[in-house]
Amino acid sequence: MEAWACRNNLQLNRSKCVEIVFSGSKRSHRVPLPPPPPLPDISRVTSVKILHVTVSSKLSDSDHVQNVISSCVQTLHALRLLRAHGLCDVALQTVYHTVVICKLLYVASVWWGFATSADRQRIEAFLRRGVRTGYRRTDEPTAAQLVGDRDDELFDRIRHNVNHVLHPLLPNQRTDTNTLSQTTHLPTLMPPNLTNGL
Image (cartoon, rainbow, N blue to C red; front, side, top):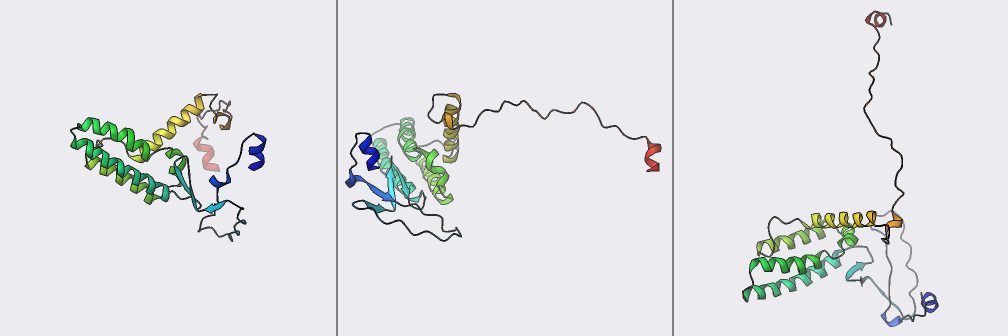
């Protein structure tokens, strides 16, 4: 990395660098390899925050879910103050959606697949708490539905925009026109007198 930085006229700041070693699942039957030797002047950590997403060495999202829910709880305190100063429920719901939902599901397409069932239930429980306090309507979609909608929107943008950075990663479009159409002919049945002799 230092060589790459030097070639690109950049300077690598070792004091801001950390190392994280990703290990396999505990359920794996393979013998775990010993970790590589530590790098000089660079500390090794078990979790690191990358673009506001906490990634752990076990590829678990529990730390990220805990951090983002704690941050959203602080936002709920601010919403209570706004309600105490007379802000109407419709405006509170708009602020809740704009701040809390966006913070809670920030780049969820990246980490939602690594989240355990317990982590997803914690997020759904937090959204149900927003419904009970009146910051969210009861007919709004769940977190899983919101993530699914965002995944579909992202895929549509990638599929229809040839200039998208991820478009070259898509497989080639199929050109065959084979369809499973219904056959127009019926099988020929043998006459009864021939079947009796068989």
